[in-house]
Length: 86
Image (cartoon, rainbow, N blue to C red; front, side, top):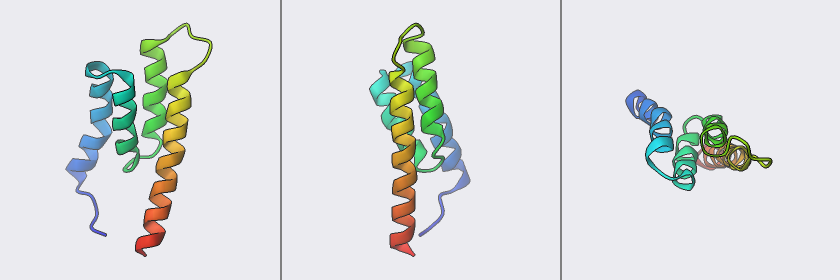
């Protein structure tokens, strides 16, 4: 598998934070999952920021829950893809 160029990795790391401002939160979590394929903990960070920005007084942390799920899914996808290719 060809490695991802550094400039594209930086774009994947920064784009979900811009999506957090310009897109609704479900679209932001989708971009966080795509970015999580490059940096898996990024999905959790974006999920926490979704909660901070969109629902600060909520009793259930929906963004954090989705971010944790997406982080675990991206770890799983990276592991399965890595083992299937090698």
